[in-house]
Image 1: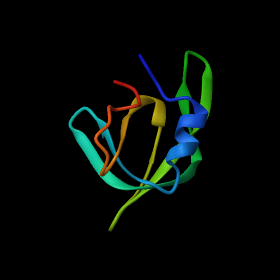
Image 2: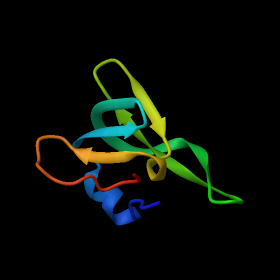
Image 3: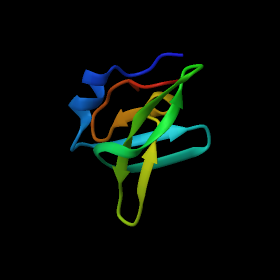
Length: 80
């Protein structure tokens, strides 16, 4: 699995992005780290990210989602 590095996530903070995991897709602003920790690896946990949209707030494990900046023609830079 390919995933973002911390500096790549930090570069997207405050930007409008699309996050996708399987059949779920959300568009909003990547606003910062989550308050919640998510399972990461066999025995670890890590803080996720927060995506804020028009009428939602999503805390998600960014290493398990595909994150694509909106409005730019670029390849996805998160997990696939």
